[in-house]
Length: 242
Image (cartoon, rainbow, N blue to C red; front, side, top):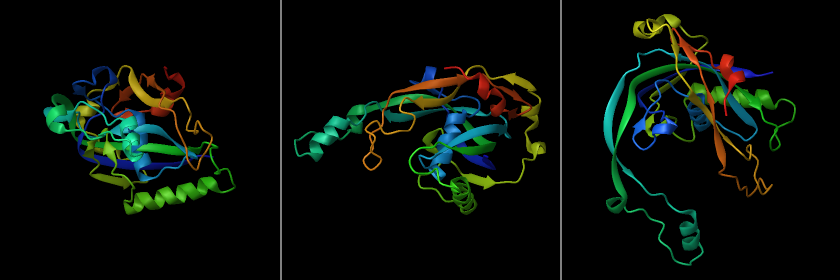
């Protein structure tokens, strides 16, 4: 049995970066399921559950804008941080005056999405006892109703936080923009579905108290159609490309 929800998400800006254009960021026209799964994990997540996006509704017209932002081109190195923690020297800081790089981004503005999703048990850790699904359902429902989260939910990039998340009984498709409906059946091409990590969420050292996870991952792709503003993700799940 799976427990499902329907929510409406709104934001001033969004950027779902195309992996083939990541130097100068260019957003997908619609959100990939993996980005929405990440947003949901900001609200509630446990190793024992996995989110599955079933349907995405694009309510507002696809409105793009170009911006320029200052970004840093370097990353904090784990080995440098570890050396400093062990008292062996090392400077883990990034100095923006030396590492700054101005880049252009093509982002979305004034977005509103309807998201239908459910979660499934993964069988990881200790969440296999009777009633586990109902427990997670009640916790997530309460957090959605109260607007609670442990990390700010964002729309693709952390710079673009979600403005509003509302749980609904059903979607009112009459609220879909006329410009979206006029597009009819749109082939969105190959899109990122999600990033799949090789460790499958299990610590590679087998220790849940002090877990170490693998960074090795591969991107799974799918080729959806948006029909009158509705993307039936569940329909395309069986045709995923890796």
